[in-house]
Length: 180
Ligand SMILES: [Fe+2]
Image 1 (cartoon, rainbow, N blue to C red):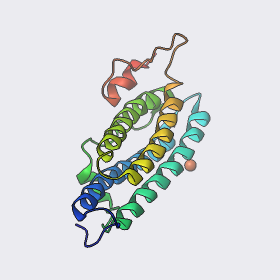
Image 2 (cartoon, rainbow, N blue to C red; image 1 turned 90 degrees about the vertical axis):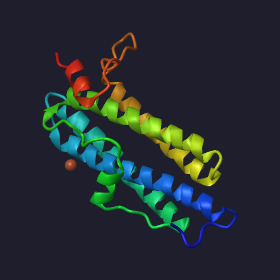
Image 3 (cartoon, protein in one colour; image 1 turned 180 degrees about the vertical axis):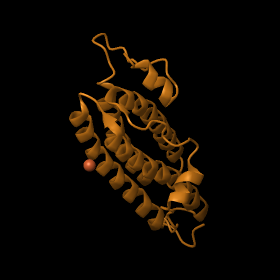
């Protein structure tokens, strides 16, 4: 709950926007930790390429989390950045792969990014009626998330443009789909 909010927004709308931002803050906090986990656990012939591709994504997503957390405070709310908040607010389970090949992790990350991009696009629609300034932040971040998703997918695509993970809906299924 907020005690004040941004001039021109009602407290009701300010609270709704802060709640939406909080959900996405936990998503980002989960994502940058998960990306580091992948950075540490990839193995195989393309190790260095994938290991090094992941770190700029970690940095960018940590920056997005910072922007959203500070937006929550700007709206008069209190951002929750603890591990407990991440676990209690996310609708999904922990990333399910440990040490695995580069293709397996990339396939699993395709599923992770699919969920995240879908949730941001839903947030952008919702914000249309609530707060265009926050929507603008979401739009800019989503463009970057979609670019990162393409970096992942470019490793999973054949020359005909078909994704090896097209029929998978879980990380484990996706990882199995690229086992050669
Ligand atoms: Fe590192």
